[in-house]
Length: 466
Image (tube, rainbow, N blue to C red):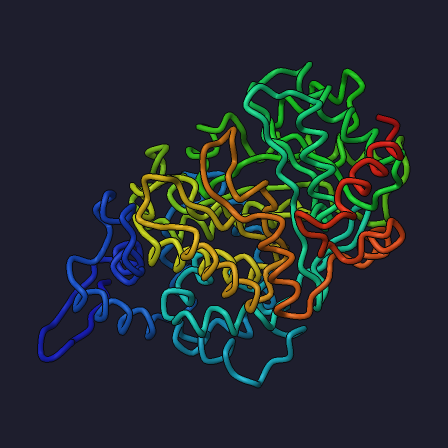
Protein backbone atom coordinates (compact mmCIF):
# COMPACT_ATOMS: atom_id res chain seq x y z
CA UNK A 1 0.00 0.00 0.00
CA UNK A 2 1.39 3.39 -0.94
CA UNK A 3 1.16 6.66 0.97
CA UNK A 4 -0.16 9.77 -0.73
CA UNK A 5 -0.53 13.50 -0.22
CA UNK A 6 -1.53 16.50 -2.32
CA UNK A 7 0.25 19.85 -2.27
CA UNK A 8 -1.36 22.68 -4.26
CA UNK A 9 -3.25 20.26 -6.49
CA UNK A 10 -0.10 18.23 -7.19
CA UNK A 11 -0.45 14.61 -6.02
CA UNK A 12 2.53 12.73 -4.59
CA UNK A 13 2.71 8.99 -3.95
CA UNK A 14 5.29 7.07 -1.89
CA UNK A 15 5.70 3.36 -2.41
CA UNK A 16 6.31 2.31 1.20
CA UNK A 17 7.41 3.56 4.62
CA UNK A 18 11.06 3.39 3.70
CA UNK A 19 10.59 5.77 0.77
CA UNK A 20 8.22 7.99 2.75
CA UNK A 21 10.68 8.48 5.61
CA UNK A 22 13.54 9.26 3.23
CA UNK A 23 11.50 11.89 1.41
CA UNK A 24 10.17 13.42 4.66
CA UNK A 25 13.58 13.82 6.27
CA UNK A 26 15.14 17.27 6.34
CA UNK A 27 17.78 17.92 3.70
CA UNK A 28 21.00 15.94 4.28
CA UNK A 29 23.80 15.44 1.78
CA UNK A 30 24.06 11.80 2.86
CA UNK A 31 20.45 11.07 1.97
CA UNK A 32 21.01 12.77 -1.38
CA UNK A 33 24.10 10.63 -1.91
CA UNK A 34 22.06 7.51 -1.11
CA UNK A 35 19.26 8.54 -3.46
CA UNK A 36 16.59 8.49 -0.74
CA UNK A 37 16.10 12.25 -0.21
CA UNK A 38 13.23 14.33 -1.52
CA UNK A 39 13.72 15.69 -5.03
CA UNK A 40 12.16 19.05 -4.15
CA UNK A 41 10.92 21.07 -1.21
CA UNK A 42 7.37 20.41 -2.39
CA UNK A 43 7.91 16.66 -2.38
CA UNK A 44 9.41 16.88 1.11
CA UNK A 45 6.39 18.83 2.33
CA UNK A 46 4.04 16.26 0.79
CA UNK A 47 5.95 13.44 2.45
CA UNK A 48 5.63 15.15 5.84
CA UNK A 49 1.88 15.55 5.31
CA UNK A 50 1.55 11.89 4.43
CA UNK A 51 3.81 10.79 7.29
CA UNK A 52 1.72 12.72 9.83
CA UNK A 53 -1.27 10.48 8.96
CA UNK A 54 0.59 7.15 9.23
CA UNK A 55 -0.62 5.02 12.19
CA UNK A 56 2.18 3.87 14.49
CA UNK A 57 0.93 0.32 13.97
CA UNK A 58 2.15 0.50 10.36
CA UNK A 59 5.75 0.40 11.60
CA UNK A 60 5.07 -3.07 13.01
CA UNK A 61 2.94 -4.27 10.11
CA UNK A 62 5.35 -3.02 7.44
CA UNK A 63 8.88 -3.11 8.94
CA UNK A 64 11.63 -1.21 7.13
CA UNK A 65 14.05 -4.10 7.66
CA UNK A 66 12.56 -7.47 8.55
CA UNK A 67 13.63 -9.18 11.76
CA UNK A 68 14.33 -12.38 9.82
CA UNK A 69 16.92 -10.52 7.73
CA UNK A 70 18.62 -8.38 10.36
CA UNK A 71 19.63 -9.27 13.94
CA UNK A 72 19.33 -5.63 14.99
CA UNK A 73 15.69 -5.48 13.83
CA UNK A 74 14.95 -8.65 15.78
CA UNK A 75 16.54 -7.28 18.95
CA UNK A 76 14.78 -3.90 18.66
CA UNK A 77 11.42 -5.61 18.26
CA UNK A 78 12.04 -7.79 21.31
CA UNK A 79 13.11 -4.75 23.35
CA UNK A 80 9.94 -2.77 22.64
CA UNK A 81 7.37 -2.77 25.46
CA UNK A 82 4.59 -4.35 23.42
CA UNK A 83 2.03 -4.13 26.21
CA UNK A 84 2.60 -0.42 26.70
CA UNK A 85 2.57 0.16 22.94
CA UNK A 86 -1.03 -1.07 22.74
CA UNK A 87 -2.05 2.12 24.53
CA UNK A 88 -0.56 4.20 21.70
CA UNK A 89 -0.95 1.92 18.66
CA UNK A 90 -3.92 3.84 17.27
CA UNK A 91 -2.04 7.15 17.24
CA UNK A 92 -0.71 8.55 14.00
CA UNK A 93 2.79 10.00 13.81
CA UNK A 94 1.27 13.48 13.83
CA UNK A 95 -0.78 12.68 16.92
CA UNK A 96 2.34 11.29 18.61
CA UNK A 97 4.03 14.65 17.96
CA UNK A 98 1.11 16.47 19.57
CA UNK A 99 1.22 14.09 22.54
CA UNK A 100 4.94 14.68 23.08
CA UNK A 101 4.69 18.46 22.77
CA UNK A 102 1.44 18.80 24.72
CA UNK A 103 0.86 19.10 28.45
CA UNK A 104 -1.06 15.85 28.85
CA UNK A 105 1.97 13.78 29.92
CA UNK A 106 4.34 14.50 32.77
CA UNK A 107 8.07 14.15 32.06
CA UNK A 108 7.94 10.78 33.83
CA UNK A 109 5.07 9.59 31.64
CA UNK A 110 6.83 10.93 28.57
CA UNK A 111 9.92 8.90 29.46
CA UNK A 112 7.74 5.81 29.88
CA UNK A 113 6.19 6.44 26.46
CA UNK A 114 9.64 6.08 24.91
CA UNK A 115 9.77 2.42 25.99
CA UNK A 116 6.69 1.75 23.86
CA UNK A 117 8.29 3.06 20.68
CA UNK A 118 10.41 1.41 18.05
CA UNK A 119 13.33 3.63 17.00
CA UNK A 120 11.75 4.12 13.57
CA UNK A 121 8.73 5.73 15.26
CA UNK A 122 10.97 8.13 17.15
CA UNK A 123 12.75 9.07 13.91
CA UNK A 124 9.42 9.62 12.17
CA UNK A 125 8.10 12.02 14.81
CA UNK A 126 11.40 13.94 14.76
CA UNK A 127 10.91 14.50 11.03
CA UNK A 128 7.70 16.42 11.78
CA UNK A 129 9.34 18.67 14.35
CA UNK A 130 10.89 22.12 13.99
CA UNK A 131 14.07 23.24 15.74
CA UNK A 132 11.99 24.68 18.58
CA UNK A 133 10.00 21.44 18.87
CA UNK A 134 13.15 19.32 19.11
CA UNK A 135 14.63 21.58 21.78
CA UNK A 136 11.45 21.82 23.85
CA UNK A 137 10.58 18.12 23.73
CA UNK A 138 14.11 17.02 24.65
CA UNK A 139 14.26 19.55 27.51
CA UNK A 140 11.43 17.69 29.25
CA UNK A 141 13.38 14.42 29.29
CA UNK A 142 16.09 13.68 31.85
CA UNK A 143 18.02 10.42 31.79
CA UNK A 144 20.10 9.86 34.93
CA UNK A 145 22.95 7.34 35.05
CA UNK A 146 25.50 6.26 37.67
CA UNK A 147 29.05 4.97 37.65
CA UNK A 148 31.49 6.61 40.09
CA UNK A 149 29.28 9.68 39.97
CA UNK A 150 25.76 10.58 38.86
CA UNK A 151 25.06 12.22 35.50
CA UNK A 152 22.01 13.66 33.80
CA UNK A 153 20.09 15.40 36.58
CA UNK A 154 18.27 18.68 36.06
CA UNK A 155 20.66 21.58 36.60
CA UNK A 156 23.72 19.55 35.57
CA UNK A 157 25.85 19.94 32.45
CA UNK A 158 28.69 17.46 32.15
CA UNK A 159 31.87 17.35 30.13
CA UNK A 160 34.10 14.65 28.75
CA UNK A 161 37.78 15.52 28.81
CA UNK A 162 39.21 14.44 25.45
CA UNK A 163 43.00 14.61 25.94
CA UNK A 164 44.01 12.93 22.67
CA UNK A 165 47.61 12.92 21.45
CA UNK A 166 48.90 12.07 17.94
CA UNK A 167 51.55 9.65 19.27
CA UNK A 168 49.71 8.46 22.39
CA UNK A 169 52.31 10.15 24.60
CA UNK A 170 51.04 9.22 28.07
CA UNK A 171 52.67 12.23 29.74
CA UNK A 172 51.03 14.65 27.31
CA UNK A 173 47.68 12.89 27.76
CA UNK A 174 48.04 13.23 31.53
CA UNK A 175 48.81 16.95 31.35
CA UNK A 176 45.86 17.59 29.03
CA UNK A 177 43.61 15.64 31.40
CA UNK A 178 44.76 17.66 34.40
CA UNK A 179 44.23 20.92 32.52
CA UNK A 180 40.67 19.84 31.78
CA UNK A 181 40.04 18.94 35.41
CA UNK A 182 41.31 22.32 36.58
CA UNK A 183 38.93 24.00 34.13
CA UNK A 184 35.97 22.00 35.45
CA UNK A 185 35.63 19.28 32.81
CA UNK A 186 35.78 15.55 33.29
CA UNK A 187 32.70 14.64 35.29
CA UNK A 188 31.28 12.59 32.40
CA UNK A 189 34.53 10.76 31.63
CA UNK A 190 38.19 11.28 30.87
CA UNK A 191 38.12 9.61 27.48
CA UNK A 192 41.13 9.17 25.20
CA UNK A 193 40.90 8.20 21.53
CA UNK A 194 44.12 6.23 21.00
CA UNK A 195 46.10 6.84 17.83
CA UNK A 196 46.89 3.14 17.50
CA UNK A 197 45.04 -0.12 18.24
CA UNK A 198 47.64 -1.49 20.64
CA UNK A 199 46.71 -3.52 23.71
CA UNK A 200 49.86 -2.29 25.48
CA UNK A 201 49.17 1.37 24.67
CA UNK A 202 45.55 1.12 25.74
CA UNK A 203 46.61 -0.56 28.97
CA UNK A 204 49.18 2.15 29.67
CA UNK A 205 46.68 4.96 29.07
CA UNK A 206 44.08 3.32 31.31
CA UNK A 207 46.58 2.64 34.09
CA UNK A 208 47.82 6.25 34.05
CA UNK A 209 44.33 7.73 34.16
CA UNK A 210 43.29 5.30 36.90
CA UNK A 211 46.30 6.32 38.96
CA UNK A 212 45.28 9.97 38.63
CA UNK A 213 41.64 9.26 39.48
CA UNK A 214 42.29 7.01 42.48
CA UNK A 215 45.16 8.88 44.13
CA UNK A 216 43.49 12.28 43.71
CA UNK A 217 40.10 10.77 44.71
CA UNK A 218 38.33 12.17 41.64
CA UNK A 219 34.69 11.06 41.36
CA UNK A 220 34.80 10.28 37.66
CA UNK A 221 35.68 7.48 35.26
CA UNK A 222 38.22 6.85 32.52
CA UNK A 223 37.90 5.27 29.13
CA UNK A 224 40.22 4.50 26.21
CA UNK A 225 38.14 4.51 23.07
CA UNK A 226 39.83 1.65 21.25
CA UNK A 227 37.91 -1.23 19.68
CA UNK A 228 35.98 -3.25 22.25
CA UNK A 229 38.19 -6.31 21.71
CA UNK A 230 41.34 -4.27 22.34
CA UNK A 231 39.93 -2.88 25.58
CA UNK A 232 38.88 -6.34 26.78
CA UNK A 233 42.31 -7.74 25.91
CA UNK A 234 43.93 -4.94 27.93
CA UNK A 235 41.58 -5.69 30.82
CA UNK A 236 42.59 -9.35 30.73
CA UNK A 237 46.19 -8.20 31.10
CA UNK A 238 45.33 -6.20 34.21
CA UNK A 239 44.28 -2.80 32.86
CA UNK A 240 41.54 -1.07 34.88
CA UNK A 241 38.43 -0.56 32.69
CA UNK A 242 35.82 1.84 34.05
CA UNK A 243 33.67 2.26 30.92
CA UNK A 244 33.67 -0.09 27.94
CA UNK A 245 33.44 1.88 24.70
CA UNK A 246 32.27 1.02 21.20
CA UNK A 247 31.00 2.84 18.13
CA UNK A 248 27.71 1.28 17.03
CA UNK A 249 25.32 1.50 14.09
CA UNK A 250 21.71 0.71 13.31
CA UNK A 251 21.93 -2.38 11.12
CA UNK A 252 23.55 -5.77 11.54
CA UNK A 253 25.69 -5.24 8.43
CA UNK A 254 26.91 -1.82 9.60
CA UNK A 255 27.91 -3.23 12.98
CA UNK A 256 29.77 -6.04 11.23
CA UNK A 257 31.77 -3.36 9.43
CA UNK A 258 32.89 -2.23 12.91
CA UNK A 259 33.87 -5.80 13.75
CA UNK A 260 31.11 -6.22 16.31
CA UNK A 261 27.74 -7.85 16.85
CA UNK A 262 25.16 -7.76 19.64
CA UNK A 263 26.52 -10.86 21.36
CA UNK A 264 30.01 -9.33 21.61
CA UNK A 265 28.56 -6.18 23.20
CA UNK A 266 26.58 -8.27 25.68
CA UNK A 267 29.62 -10.38 26.58
CA UNK A 268 31.80 -7.29 27.02
CA UNK A 269 29.27 -5.65 29.32
CA UNK A 270 29.06 -8.71 31.57
CA UNK A 271 32.84 -9.02 31.74
CA UNK A 272 33.25 -5.39 32.78
CA UNK A 273 30.49 -5.66 35.39
CA UNK A 274 32.31 -8.64 36.90
CA UNK A 275 35.59 -6.69 36.68
CA UNK A 276 33.93 -3.87 38.66
CA UNK A 277 32.66 -6.26 41.32
CA UNK A 278 36.21 -7.44 41.89
CA UNK A 279 37.67 -3.90 41.92
CA UNK A 280 35.07 -2.16 44.05
CA UNK A 281 34.65 1.62 44.31
CA UNK A 282 31.60 1.95 42.05
CA UNK A 283 28.04 2.97 42.89
CA UNK A 284 25.32 0.30 43.20
CA UNK A 285 23.31 -0.48 40.05
CA UNK A 286 25.80 1.42 37.93
CA UNK A 287 26.14 1.47 34.15
CA UNK A 288 29.38 0.54 32.38
CA UNK A 289 28.89 1.07 28.63
CA UNK A 290 29.82 4.10 26.52
CA UNK A 291 28.57 4.28 22.92
CA UNK A 292 29.14 6.69 20.05
CA UNK A 293 26.84 7.03 17.05
CA UNK A 294 26.51 9.43 14.15
CA UNK A 295 24.26 10.03 11.15
CA UNK A 296 25.78 8.59 7.99
CA UNK A 297 27.70 5.69 9.52
CA UNK A 298 25.49 2.98 7.98
CA UNK A 299 25.64 4.68 4.57
CA UNK A 300 29.43 4.97 4.75
CA UNK A 301 29.57 1.21 5.33
CA UNK A 302 27.13 0.61 2.42
CA UNK A 303 24.89 -1.06 4.99
CA UNK A 304 21.88 1.29 5.17
CA UNK A 305 19.49 -0.89 3.11
CA UNK A 306 17.98 2.18 1.46
CA UNK A 307 16.97 3.68 4.83
CA UNK A 308 17.56 7.40 5.50
CA UNK A 309 20.34 8.34 7.87
CA UNK A 310 18.15 9.76 10.67
CA UNK A 311 16.21 6.48 10.86
CA UNK A 312 19.45 4.48 10.79
CA UNK A 313 20.73 6.69 13.62
CA UNK A 314 17.56 6.08 15.64
CA UNK A 315 18.08 2.35 15.20
CA UNK A 316 21.65 2.77 16.50
CA UNK A 317 20.12 4.44 19.57
CA UNK A 318 17.89 1.41 19.89
CA UNK A 319 20.99 -0.78 19.92
CA UNK A 320 22.47 1.37 22.68
CA UNK A 321 19.29 1.05 24.73
CA UNK A 322 19.73 -2.74 24.80
CA UNK A 323 22.82 -2.38 27.00
CA UNK A 324 21.82 0.27 29.58
CA UNK A 325 24.74 2.65 28.88
CA UNK A 326 26.27 5.25 31.19
CA UNK A 327 27.03 7.58 28.26
CA UNK A 328 25.96 7.89 24.63
CA UNK A 329 26.98 10.64 22.28
CA UNK A 330 26.43 11.56 18.68
CA UNK A 331 29.58 12.72 16.91
CA UNK A 332 27.31 14.78 14.74
CA UNK A 333 29.69 16.57 12.37
CA UNK A 334 32.68 14.25 12.48
CA UNK A 335 31.84 11.94 9.58
CA UNK A 336 32.20 14.74 7.01
CA UNK A 337 30.33 16.85 4.45
CA UNK A 338 29.43 13.86 2.29
CA UNK A 339 26.81 13.11 4.96
CA UNK A 340 26.19 16.50 6.63
CA UNK A 341 27.38 19.20 4.29
CA UNK A 342 27.02 22.43 6.20
CA UNK A 343 26.09 24.32 9.35
CA UNK A 344 22.35 23.95 8.78
CA UNK A 345 22.50 20.19 8.28
CA UNK A 346 24.85 19.63 11.23
CA UNK A 347 22.62 21.71 13.51
CA UNK A 348 19.50 19.85 12.43
CA UNK A 349 21.14 16.44 12.83
CA UNK A 350 22.51 17.29 16.27
CA UNK A 351 19.09 18.33 17.56
CA UNK A 352 17.45 15.27 15.98
CA UNK A 353 19.99 12.86 17.45
CA UNK A 354 19.67 14.37 20.91
CA UNK A 355 15.86 14.32 20.92
CA UNK A 356 15.52 10.82 19.49
CA UNK A 357 18.08 9.42 21.92
CA UNK A 358 16.41 11.08 24.92
CA UNK A 359 12.96 9.89 23.79
CA UNK A 360 14.29 6.33 23.63
CA UNK A 361 15.68 6.69 27.15
CA UNK A 362 19.37 7.31 26.48
CA UNK A 363 21.78 9.56 28.44
CA UNK A 364 22.61 11.66 25.40
CA UNK A 365 25.61 13.86 24.93
CA UNK A 366 26.69 15.43 21.66
CA UNK A 367 30.12 16.05 20.21
CA UNK A 368 29.33 19.42 18.65
CA UNK A 369 31.91 19.23 15.92
CA UNK A 370 32.80 19.69 12.28
CA UNK A 371 35.64 18.83 9.95
CA UNK A 372 37.66 21.52 8.24
CA UNK A 373 36.27 20.71 4.79
CA UNK A 374 32.63 21.20 5.88
CA UNK A 375 30.80 24.50 5.41
CA UNK A 376 30.75 25.26 9.14
CA UNK A 377 32.82 27.17 11.67
CA UNK A 378 33.23 27.75 15.39
CA UNK A 379 30.35 30.23 15.48
CA UNK A 380 27.97 27.64 14.07
CA UNK A 381 29.27 25.09 16.56
CA UNK A 382 28.59 27.52 19.40
CA UNK A 383 25.06 28.06 18.11
CA UNK A 384 24.40 24.32 18.33
CA UNK A 385 26.08 24.12 21.73
CA UNK A 386 23.69 26.72 23.13
CA UNK A 387 20.63 25.12 21.52
CA UNK A 388 21.57 21.73 22.95
CA UNK A 389 22.24 23.20 26.39
CA UNK A 390 18.71 24.64 26.28
CA UNK A 391 17.49 21.17 25.26
CA UNK A 392 19.07 19.59 28.34
CA UNK A 393 21.99 17.78 26.71
CA UNK A 394 23.79 15.64 29.31
CA UNK A 395 27.35 16.52 28.31
CA UNK A 396 29.70 17.90 25.68
CA UNK A 397 33.33 17.35 24.72
CA UNK A 398 36.10 19.32 26.41
CA UNK A 399 38.92 19.54 23.85
CA UNK A 400 41.92 21.85 24.41
CA UNK A 401 41.22 25.03 22.40
CA UNK A 402 38.41 23.12 20.60
CA UNK A 403 41.03 21.62 18.25
CA UNK A 404 41.67 17.88 18.40
CA UNK A 405 45.29 17.48 17.33
CA UNK A 406 45.00 13.72 16.84
CA UNK A 407 41.63 13.35 15.09
CA UNK A 408 42.09 16.64 13.19
CA UNK A 409 38.62 18.08 13.65
CA UNK A 410 37.04 20.94 15.59
CA UNK A 411 34.89 20.42 18.67
CA UNK A 412 34.06 22.31 21.88
CA UNK A 413 36.49 23.49 24.54
CA UNK A 414 36.54 23.45 28.33
CA UNK A 415 35.90 27.20 28.20
CA UNK A 416 32.82 26.71 25.99
CA UNK A 417 31.33 24.38 28.59
CA UNK A 418 32.19 26.70 31.49
CA UNK A 419 30.51 29.55 29.61
CA UNK A 420 27.38 27.46 28.93
CA UNK A 421 27.21 26.57 32.63
CA UNK A 422 27.43 30.25 33.57
CA UNK A 423 24.81 31.31 31.02
CA UNK A 424 22.27 28.70 32.08
CA UNK A 425 23.05 28.43 35.79
CA UNK A 426 24.25 24.83 35.51
CA UNK A 427 26.86 22.89 37.46
CA UNK A 428 28.95 19.76 36.99
CA UNK A 429 27.77 16.43 38.41
CA UNK A 430 27.19 16.95 42.16
CA UNK A 431 29.94 14.61 43.37
CA UNK A 432 32.37 16.22 40.95
CA UNK A 433 31.30 19.74 41.94
CA UNK A 434 32.02 18.89 45.58
CA UNK A 435 35.45 17.59 44.59
CA UNK A 436 36.24 20.76 42.61
CA UNK A 437 35.29 22.99 45.50
CA UNK A 438 37.32 20.84 47.90
CA UNK A 439 40.36 21.36 45.66
CA UNK A 440 39.83 25.11 45.63
CA UNK A 441 38.88 25.09 41.96
CA UNK A 442 35.42 26.61 42.29
CA UNK A 443 33.06 25.12 39.71
CA UNK A 444 35.42 25.00 36.80
CA UNK A 445 35.48 28.72 36.10
CA UNK A 446 39.26 29.09 36.32
CA UNK A 447 40.50 30.89 33.20
CA UNK A 448 43.87 31.14 31.43
CA UNK A 449 45.91 33.91 32.95
CA UNK A 450 44.36 33.32 36.35
CA UNK A 451 47.23 32.99 38.85
CA UNK A 452 45.40 30.04 40.45
CA UNK A 453 45.72 27.94 37.29
CA UNK A 454 49.37 26.86 37.43
CA UNK A 455 49.41 26.03 41.17
CA UNK A 456 46.17 24.07 40.73
CA UNK A 457 47.75 21.94 38.02
CA UNK A 458 50.81 21.32 40.21
CA UNK A 459 48.67 20.39 43.23
CA UNK A 460 46.63 17.96 41.17
CA UNK A 461 49.68 16.27 39.66
CA UNK A 462 51.27 16.02 43.11
CA UNK A 463 48.07 14.53 44.53
CA UNK A 464 48.16 11.97 41.74
CA UNK A 465 51.71 11.00 42.63
CA UNK A 466 53.23 12.31 39.38
